[in-house]
Length: 329
Image 1: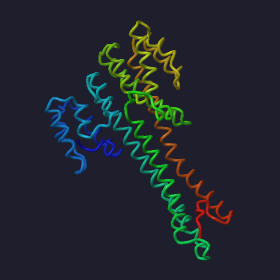
Image 2 (image 1 turned 60 degrees about the horizontal axis):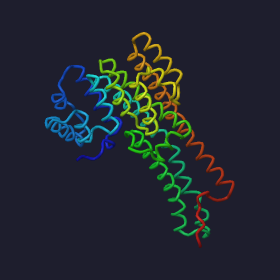
Image 3 (image 1 turned 180 degrees about the horizontal axis):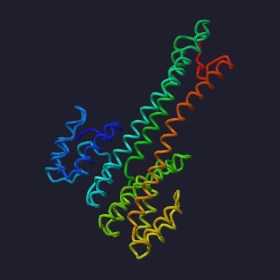
């Protein structure tokens, strides 16, 4: 089995889903579409593997997962979209989202080059006087340079792990990591918003295509990547299946913009336009997420540069690097 879909970059995911979406809208069959889809040469064999799994009778979402093209969360979203009739709209949303994230990641990396270069230069230069004076051994100098780089590398590893966890379906049981993601300042609320966006869009697409509420609710709940949220929405699902209206069941949820969601659903139920109301709410959440990602890409490099400048100033005032190790001479 190929390596996980995480090996695909945001740009490659955007390319994949844009091609699938365009071919789906053109009425091209899935098997024929996979013969047309083009990725970079290293990833192209996965398309052939996905086609082979389809020909063996597996559904589209499962075939994409086995080929290493779809992430676990994308699998649940595609399965929900298939229940709605056609995944074309989902493909387009995923393509747009990944394209935007690819551009933001590219801009962020470019903007972080200067503070990273300044930090590396400071790590190399600040301990030099002590090394030349003989107060610091060569081993101490090398460790003083490597130690902060290892710390920053560890932090980057943790951030990437959190991002990958956020893109996976909820685990069978709640974990400390799952709870911690929701409690992170600012980022926790965004994590919840993304879950709500996926849920409301999946539910809206299915209801719009004529899938009954009874069948649509479990599939929409499966798109949630937070175990805590999935537990809350399973309770909501039980209340609706027991006869409560969706707007009444939503009252018990503790989520961002609950009043907005309740208002839209109430209007949708009263006017018979519930699918459109849910899709409208999903679009608003997408806009909020996109706005945050743009601001993050703008301000993160500035913050990093400011922290590096403060660290350098502190080192100069203190007469030694913050990271100089206390090793025996």
